[in-house]
Length: 187
Image 1: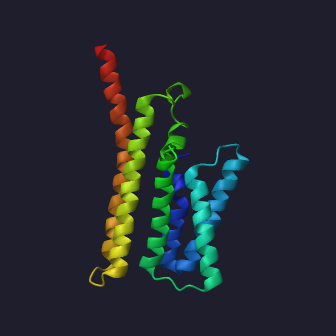
Image 2 (image 1 turned 45 degrees about the horizontal axis):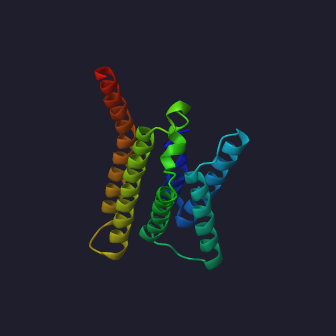
Image 3 (image 1 turned 90 degrees about the vertical axis):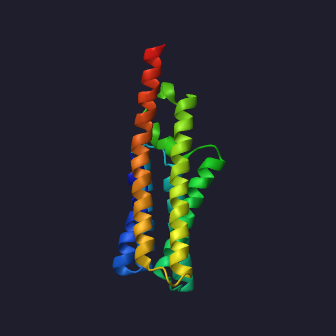
């Protein structure tokens, strides 16, 4: 499964938040997270840090919203979700299990899983995702707390940062493989 499927609940949230409101977006994202986690369990796959974190995040925010009747602004709910996502990614780094590692192991032969290059590559990719989510949090905070910044700027910055992380996640492992291949030919 790819990282993009792992962020599907967040994409569901952002789409439905704009179409039906923050509460609908949060609940739909919780349902998507739950369905994704159950699908993984049913298929005998390991449930990943991102999926577990997403499930907890959207369950918590949905429950909080329903219990308190919180009326979120678009920027504030995005700030809460993006902050939660940043927390998940940072926690994966702190515990020494970059969230990208679980996805990479699905595509890379097991013999490379303990390789310093493999581990370093995943730390770097996860750091790029952490920086991306930090940019999203900053853009959300600016949209919420700096009235002169329109929500469109928040959205444009968020989309650009996200696409940059997706590009890097594809480009960097390929660049590392090319570099290793060149070194092996020299040896």
